[in-house]
Structure formats: structure tokens, C-alpha cells
Amino acid sequence: MENLKRALSFGGILGEGDIEEITADFTVHHLKPGQHFITPGEVSGQLAFVDEGVFRIYVTNDEQEEATRYFMRKNQFMMDIDCFYNHRPAESGVQAVTEARLLITQRDEWLRSSERIPKLFILTKTLTEMALINKIKDNDFLHFGTAKQRYLEFMKRYPDLALSVPQQYIASYLQITPQSLSRIRREAVNHHP
Image 1 (cartoon, rainbow, N blue to C red):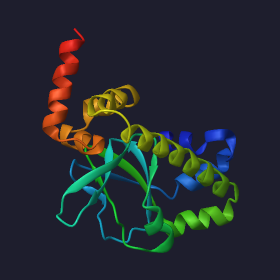
Image 2 (image 1 turned 60 degrees about the vertical axis):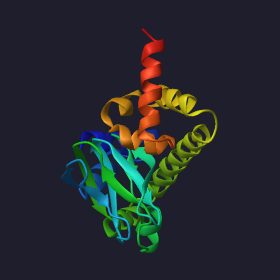
Image 3 (image 1 turned 135 degrees about the horizontal axis):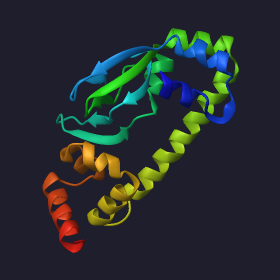
Image 4 (image 1 turned 90 degrees about the horizontal axis):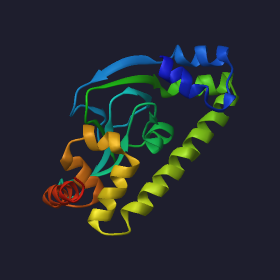
């Protein structure tokens, strides 16, 4: 729970007692690669903190082809916002791509904590805004440049993911084929002795 406590102490918004009270509502869950935190179509009322591991957020088209939209890593909170707050079926799936440990709380517990601890709303808003800004930046680099430029930018931003995430998910995230990714990686290795 130490990573979660550190995350909740971000910005000094919450006091130590508040953090202890909030973390008491979280339980530990272990997932293996391929297991889902949220399955598309499911109505999930859970908020998770990634204590260990990497997850991918993906969508599926009418032909049942999956496209990886984002990766979530250690020390990040994750949920399907529309699902969590509006009780709607999830449009995206959230799947472990490595061994993972989540700390999970339920919507009702989180909302009760938010009522008891008004500053939790401020922290939630701050963390949500930061996550949104990062997703916008990621979206920007994914829509400009060549496939090689996108890969090199991915490597610069997320060297840890390049080592731990299966290549097919990285290729999907970069919007290229796995074969193109293999070629780009070979070229990058050959040009950097």
C-alpha cells in the first residue's frame, strides 16, 4: 500500500489520516498477462491503482480487431470514467500485459470517502487533469511523423514499456503492423552500434 499512499499524498492535498482512511478501502488483486480488469461491455464500478505491472486499454472494431489506445503503468490510477460514474457498459477493455498487482476500491466506497474528505475531490480532479494532458501529448505524437519517428518517440518516452510489453501491443499502439515494427527495430539496432 506504500505506493498508493505516496500517490495519494501528491501535492500535499490530503493529510496522513485521510490517506490512511482512504487506503483502508482498497484490496489487493493479482492478474496474469491476458486477464482483464475491465472487459468491454461490462459495467464496472471499480477504481484501481496499479501497484505493479502494465495494462493496455484497447477497443475492438466490428471485425473484432483490437487496437491498443493507451498503456497504464505502475503508480497510475485507472478506471473507465463513463462506466464508473454513469453506470454505462465499458467501450474499452483494460487487460494486463504483464504480471500485475492492483489495489482496487469500489465506486460506493470511493464516493463515500469523497463525501467524508472533500479534499479528495480536489486530488481526483488534479490527477485526472494530469492524466488527460499526458494522453493529449501521446495522441499528438501518434498522429504526426513516420512510423519510425513514432517508434523512436515511444522509445524516448517509455523505454520501460518497450522492454516489458509484447511487440504486437506496441505495434497496435503505434498504429503499424507487427512486421513494420520488427523492421523498424532492426533498422534502429543496425544504425546504433
